[in-house]
Image (cartoon, rainbow, N blue to C red):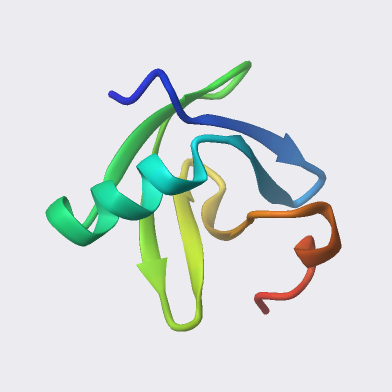
Length: 74
């Protein structure tokens, strides 16, 4: 589990607050990253077609890397 990557729930999506470079590096090397999301627990992050995706108990949802990108991956 990576504690230096901060992800929060943003409505029906997830938002990456901190650790952009660490997440990208981890996904290139390992293919997936496991991150703790407050009030939800551990989620798996992978790289999807053109975006990052969060695999959680709510299904496969986009991970936005900026506020402007909140609905950019649908």
